[in-house]
Image (cartoon, rainbow, N blue to C red; front, side, top):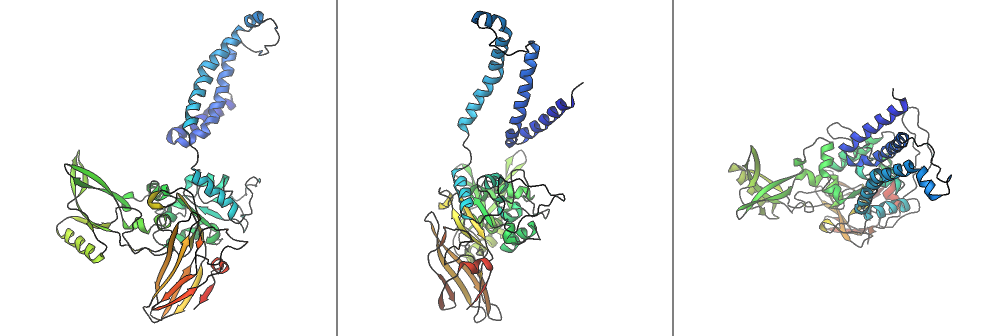
Length: 465
């Protein structure tokens, strides 16, 4: 009859083994079980050899020592050859090939620890588990929104609280109406994104539920399919493949669709939160073609139409549909929006990592979630109002933040500007990505210079002009 402790170890080891076979990341946890089971195996081998005394110093004569401890030496050799050596060899192979966290994430989370307000919760403090399961976070505590893969890095290196983590907590789902990282990064307008952050904890401000957002290139491209999958949304809603004939071959071409460019992931990573006019689209016409075995693939019926004239693109689409083709406006690159995208009003880039990757963008970006300074004014109804400010990042990459609004039927307009032109304050983020000048505010044919203090950005104060 097995002892309860042995049954516990075996059951625990079996469960972790099944998890490790399903997902490689659980092999970290399974290593503990392997160590314990190896100890059991060594103990069993010693017992089988009737070895109970491991003291080798009782005999000073080497010959007598070997003779009297032959079984111990044999057991040690067997244990080394069949248990220690194979494990050591494979461990060395894996250790040499393992790269660890990206350097960009290490420097970015280190920056987070050193340049953002203290959350009032020390990483190494012990905290009692609340009886009702809801921990009473202090008012100073805040969350960091990112994909769940990076939660432990944010916590252990950045000493900040992630909204989602590798225990697969905080991911959420669009289709199940559960707030989390998946609905946030898939949100197709800023109002949706804000609603997700409010729902994380309705008893706290959304600006504390998530105070910073960290995004990298894989989240915007390679891992984007996982964000959609967690929300049970087909990846084809955002991106797809079509085939184009080149000579005698059909070559796959990646296309990017409107919901992708409107997503928070694309708007933050590729567009830095500024507005885009959506004039980088192409017109595509295609039909289904059999690839054998009952499989059909979309193939282009003619070359993509490339023009920045939206009217011409729409005419091409209508003409192709009239021919019986499927047709749409899309983009050939995730960095070139095929559709108009509004500027983000409550998110500002405050830091980016050192390495350049897709389309000149840096690998990791950190945005701060702020109320923004509210600019209110009056102009004739239908007047175009534009706020512009050049931004220089900590990596000396420049871009233009621009936000456009139109005065309403009553002649009123409102802009919400996330960047401070006057620099950091002691109680806030020590940001090193910032405007190079004051905002240029254009109201119709008139242009004004506008300075925005950091205190107004953080409080959501109104500036009337």
